[in-house]
Image 1 (cartoon, one colour):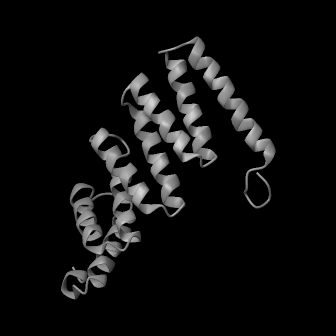
Image 2 (image 1 turned 180 degrees about the horizontal axis):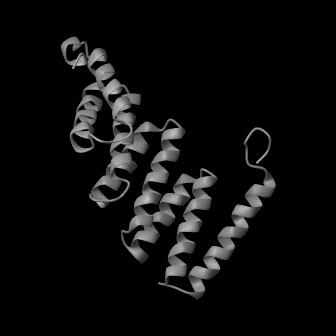
Length: 168
Protein backbone atom coordinates (compact mmCIF):
# COMPACT_ATOMS: atom_id res chain seq x y z
CA UNK A 1 0.00 0.00 0.00
CA UNK A 2 1.12 3.55 -0.59
CA UNK A 3 1.11 6.35 2.02
CA UNK A 4 -2.60 7.00 1.39
CA UNK A 5 -3.54 3.35 1.90
CA UNK A 6 -4.20 2.65 -1.78
CA UNK A 7 -3.07 -0.54 -3.43
CA UNK A 8 0.06 -0.22 -5.54
CA UNK A 9 0.88 -2.25 -8.66
CA UNK A 10 3.21 -4.37 -6.51
CA UNK A 11 0.29 -5.17 -4.20
CA UNK A 12 -1.87 -6.10 -7.16
CA UNK A 13 0.86 -8.35 -8.53
CA UNK A 14 1.09 -10.10 -5.14
CA UNK A 15 -2.65 -10.76 -5.05
CA UNK A 16 -2.50 -12.19 -8.57
CA UNK A 17 0.51 -14.36 -7.68
CA UNK A 18 -1.20 -15.55 -4.50
CA UNK A 19 -4.25 -16.63 -6.49
CA UNK A 20 -2.05 -18.60 -8.90
CA UNK A 21 -0.45 -20.44 -5.97
CA UNK A 22 -3.79 -21.02 -4.24
CA UNK A 23 -5.35 -22.37 -7.43
CA UNK A 24 -2.41 -24.72 -7.91
CA UNK A 25 -2.98 -26.10 -4.40
CA UNK A 26 -6.69 -26.51 -5.12
CA UNK A 27 -5.96 -28.35 -8.36
CA UNK A 28 -3.30 -30.66 -6.89
CA UNK A 29 -5.10 -31.46 -3.62
CA UNK A 30 -8.85 -31.31 -4.31
CA UNK A 31 -11.33 -31.83 -1.48
CA UNK A 32 -8.64 -31.55 1.21
CA UNK A 33 -8.26 -29.18 4.13
CA UNK A 34 -5.43 -27.52 2.19
CA UNK A 35 -7.71 -26.94 -0.79
CA UNK A 36 -10.34 -25.49 1.51
CA UNK A 37 -7.84 -23.03 3.01
CA UNK A 38 -6.53 -22.15 -0.44
CA UNK A 39 -10.07 -21.51 -1.68
CA UNK A 40 -10.59 -19.21 1.28
CA UNK A 41 -7.34 -17.47 0.34
CA UNK A 42 -8.58 -16.87 -3.22
CA UNK A 43 -11.77 -15.31 -1.88
CA UNK A 44 -9.81 -13.11 0.52
CA UNK A 45 -7.52 -11.81 -2.22
CA UNK A 46 -10.55 -10.81 -4.28
CA UNK A 47 -12.14 -9.24 -1.20
CA UNK A 48 -8.98 -7.27 -0.36
CA UNK A 49 -8.96 -5.88 -3.87
CA UNK A 50 -12.70 -5.10 -3.57
CA UNK A 51 -13.41 -7.40 -6.51
CA UNK A 52 -16.68 -8.41 -4.92
CA UNK A 53 -18.28 -10.10 -7.92
CA UNK A 54 -15.29 -12.42 -8.21
CA UNK A 55 -15.31 -12.99 -4.43
CA UNK A 56 -19.00 -13.91 -4.56
CA UNK A 57 -18.47 -16.22 -7.54
CA UNK A 58 -15.63 -18.03 -5.81
CA UNK A 59 -17.67 -18.15 -2.61
CA UNK A 60 -20.44 -20.03 -4.44
CA UNK A 61 -17.84 -22.50 -5.70
CA UNK A 62 -16.52 -22.83 -2.15
CA UNK A 63 -20.00 -23.71 -0.88
CA UNK A 64 -20.47 -26.33 -3.59
CA UNK A 65 -17.09 -27.90 -2.87
CA UNK A 66 -16.87 -27.68 0.92
CA UNK A 67 -20.35 -26.91 2.18
CA UNK A 68 -21.34 -24.56 4.93
CA UNK A 69 -18.79 -24.20 7.72
CA UNK A 70 -17.19 -21.49 9.84
CA UNK A 71 -15.00 -20.27 7.00
CA UNK A 72 -18.01 -19.90 4.69
CA UNK A 73 -19.91 -18.02 7.40
CA UNK A 74 -16.99 -15.63 7.81
CA UNK A 75 -16.58 -15.08 4.07
CA UNK A 76 -20.26 -14.16 3.62
CA UNK A 77 -19.84 -11.51 6.34
CA UNK A 78 -16.65 -10.17 4.74
CA UNK A 79 -18.44 -9.65 1.44
CA UNK A 80 -21.27 -7.87 3.25
CA UNK A 81 -18.74 -5.69 5.08
CA UNK A 82 -17.00 -4.66 1.88
CA UNK A 83 -20.33 -3.69 0.34
CA UNK A 84 -21.29 -1.79 3.50
CA UNK A 85 -17.98 0.12 3.45
CA UNK A 86 -18.69 1.07 -0.18
CA UNK A 87 -22.10 2.36 0.95
CA UNK A 88 -23.83 -0.31 -1.13
CA UNK A 89 -26.26 -0.91 1.72
CA UNK A 90 -28.96 -2.82 -0.18
CA UNK A 91 -26.43 -5.31 -1.54
CA UNK A 92 -24.78 -5.61 1.88
CA UNK A 93 -28.18 -6.22 3.47
CA UNK A 94 -28.79 -9.04 1.00
CA UNK A 95 -25.45 -10.65 1.91
CA UNK A 96 -26.16 -10.45 5.64
CA UNK A 97 -29.69 -11.83 5.22
CA UNK A 98 -28.52 -14.69 3.00
CA UNK A 99 -25.81 -15.43 5.58
CA UNK A 100 -28.44 -15.57 8.34
CA UNK A 101 -30.44 -18.08 6.28
CA UNK A 102 -27.41 -20.18 5.36
CA UNK A 103 -25.95 -20.13 8.89
CA UNK A 104 -28.80 -19.70 11.41
CA UNK A 105 -26.49 -20.80 14.24
CA UNK A 106 -23.24 -19.48 12.75
CA UNK A 107 -20.62 -17.67 14.75
CA UNK A 108 -21.17 -14.51 12.67
CA UNK A 109 -24.93 -14.45 13.40
CA UNK A 110 -24.76 -11.64 15.99
CA UNK A 111 -22.52 -9.45 13.85
CA UNK A 112 -24.57 -10.08 10.69
CA UNK A 113 -27.81 -9.26 12.52
CA UNK A 114 -26.29 -6.02 13.77
CA UNK A 115 -24.96 -5.07 10.34
CA UNK A 116 -28.25 -5.93 8.61
CA UNK A 117 -30.06 -3.53 10.96
CA UNK A 118 -27.37 -0.91 10.28
CA UNK A 119 -27.95 -1.30 6.55
CA UNK A 120 -31.66 -0.59 7.03
CA UNK A 121 -30.76 2.38 9.24
CA UNK A 122 -28.34 3.71 6.59
CA UNK A 123 -31.02 3.29 3.92
CA UNK A 124 -33.29 5.37 6.20
CA UNK A 125 -35.81 2.53 6.35
CA UNK A 126 -36.45 3.39 9.97
CA UNK A 127 -39.52 1.24 10.52
CA UNK A 128 -37.60 -1.84 9.39
CA UNK A 129 -34.44 -0.81 11.25
CA UNK A 130 -36.46 -0.34 14.46
CA UNK A 131 -37.85 -3.85 14.15
CA UNK A 132 -34.39 -5.25 13.44
CA UNK A 133 -32.86 -3.46 16.40
CA UNK A 134 -35.67 -4.66 18.67
CA UNK A 135 -35.08 -8.23 17.51
CA UNK A 136 -31.34 -7.79 18.06
CA UNK A 137 -31.91 -6.60 21.65
CA UNK A 138 -34.15 -9.60 22.27
CA UNK A 139 -31.67 -12.10 20.76
CA UNK A 140 -28.36 -10.55 21.87
CA UNK A 141 -29.08 -8.52 24.99
CA UNK A 142 -25.54 -9.10 26.33
CA UNK A 143 -23.83 -7.92 23.15
CA UNK A 144 -20.93 -5.48 23.27
CA UNK A 145 -22.77 -3.23 20.81
CA UNK A 146 -26.03 -3.11 22.76
CA UNK A 147 -25.64 0.60 23.65
CA UNK A 148 -25.18 1.51 20.00
CA UNK A 149 -28.20 -0.61 19.08
CA UNK A 150 -30.31 1.12 21.73
CA UNK A 151 -29.22 4.53 20.45
CA UNK A 152 -30.01 3.62 16.84
CA UNK A 153 -33.36 2.16 17.88
CA UNK A 154 -34.25 5.41 19.66
CA UNK A 155 -33.12 7.41 16.62
CA UNK A 156 -35.22 5.20 14.32
CA UNK A 157 -38.31 5.88 16.46
CA UNK A 158 -37.48 9.58 16.54
CA UNK A 159 -37.18 9.64 12.72
CA UNK A 160 -40.60 7.97 12.55
CA UNK A 161 -41.91 10.71 14.87
CA UNK A 162 -42.76 8.05 17.40
CA UNK A 163 -41.44 10.12 20.28
CA UNK A 164 -42.98 8.01 23.02
CA UNK A 165 -41.19 4.89 21.70
CA UNK A 166 -37.91 6.76 21.30
CA UNK A 167 -37.80 7.36 25.06
CA UNK A 168 -37.97 3.63 25.95
